[in-house]
Image (cartoon, rainbow, N blue to C red):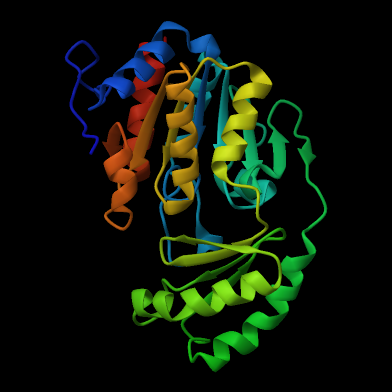
Length: 289
């Protein structure tokens, strides 16, 4: 598992972590050596924004926008890769109209949508028809399973998520829902993505790994830092592993959570949630100053 250890050569007020793996150290070295060819890619919920019981109340950590504005001009690009609609992530993140964020891109719905900070332009395809069909069946399904009061449905346009964090027993509600929601998704040509007390039904063929691969190729990046906290970030971790195997250095960062031990095990660096992510990004910006 990755660990966080202070590098003595950095500012002690904001130390840069030393990756626990050789591959992670090579990734960090490549970012520091050629920041103009580096991409910093980050999940939103749980990574830049603390996890909250009501997803509509999620907002970026207070230090996230300032540190991204300090870092973005020093690297090739910063990409926020999220399952949320891009417009929602931009609004909850407070990313629009911020000086220094001209190189920020938000890839919403796992890359199906793209928002460019430099222009404010949003590119989004038509919604996938199976999502509406599944959404129409959800109220009856939740009532039949006896979890209608504890589960909360989030309509996301190109996906729909069922959250159980508000339930009296969130994990029990999650397990009750897993198989029925998988059956529902299959009937409508969707897949189920489990997360931290959430099950998301979305179209197949899109994930954060695909989004990261496509974005890296589109700008000719030569190194990458990816930070995430949830099961939905595992495809991006795998994408970085593939890039490293092909000779493109990368650094994997886990925004620490005991709810997703696999992510912690695979990370080069583990930090303490969004506050730790902000600290790491700030230390990186300091080193690139």
